[in-house]
Image 1 (cartoon, one colour):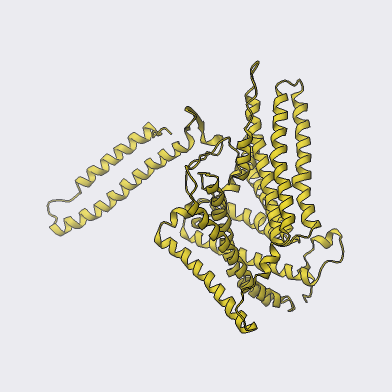
Image 2 (spheres, rainbow, N blue to C red):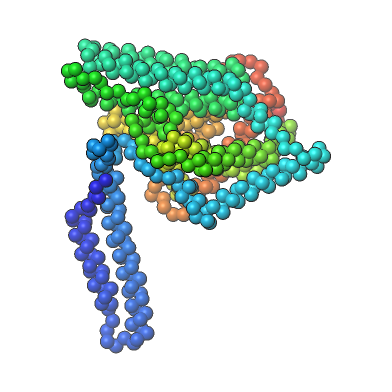
Length: 521
């Protein structure tokens, strides 16, 4: 990538200011009557002022360089041919490590990781101690874990069906449409017909089939989440493949006797497994697989799995299983929310570490996928706008390029607020759909927190908020939000167990059982 040059006017102005600053530094103001100590004190004070000015000038120049680098052309070389494209043409992949991998090189940060491992060991010891006191034996039972991941045979065959469909149908549909488009007299009719057929197939196989399997076979929670999350992933990946490939075919009309250049089958197959939702014909690749890194990552994933199990068994199940037998009271509700904050935030951090760091890095390493920026330093955010952008970069990129930017393109750059709101609503609906299908009941806590409070915080706590106070506010909101979600979802889970539904009417399905099951309001 060529090194961008700062603008001439700004560069000249800043060089003059910098030269003037250095002149001031070499000639501090002091008359001949100054004593030696006064001169030294005045010199130190003046040097501090000059230091601030120099650092400000350097920061401004670096800011100009980085701004031009981000908006200027990027030169890449593929097979000896150099091409240039702008950053705003789409996501640019590059070789970079995950942030936590870099931070774990620092001994102070690695100690925090060791502290979490120590807490896991404490959970194991406490479970063994309680088991020995209650039953007189030392046995770690994982009944809840085996129940949650039950019926894996059903999960396997429905996943295989979704995978082969996602691999064969969108790819061959694109080839069929592309081979006829430039020769067809009615290009609009061909495009609309193909789009309608593909949409119908997508709805039937990737839309309705997973829902039918989850409901018909009464899959347990973890198995439900596997099916539903894979359903969403295949939908997003197949859409990205079509969305990125169609414009290329439209622009490159083949000449007489030439064949249309379609995306290769191997590149699409690689895309279905690599840890990104943005399709490219090729990605930056690492030179080799670090098998030690793979084994350590697999171990960490298993550790996170057992960590989550112990959090539920030791902190959530005893609290809400006994509470479900008690009458409702405001005091009990408030206490339950605050008791849920600790397991809630621990589950949030576990989900982040297990999925966004370990799971995605595992597939990235096995596939030698070099761009590992799956998240950024969201924990340092002073605004919710920055938190939403940095928490999950993989999903954010998909929503930004195919939701926000396409909305602006269709509206010719207008209605930016509407574009942002539409992305929030879509994200909130998908999150709520995943939770509703995973838990087996409809209780729109996530949707309400995401679509209402999330939108409000996004506009009120924006990027202009830079004070560390706002980082404290953000973490406080995360603590409370996680406590509310864990509390209400656990209460609803036990209400569904104690008071199963007796009807199939619409209101029976969407009304939470915890509102009426055994509570005296």
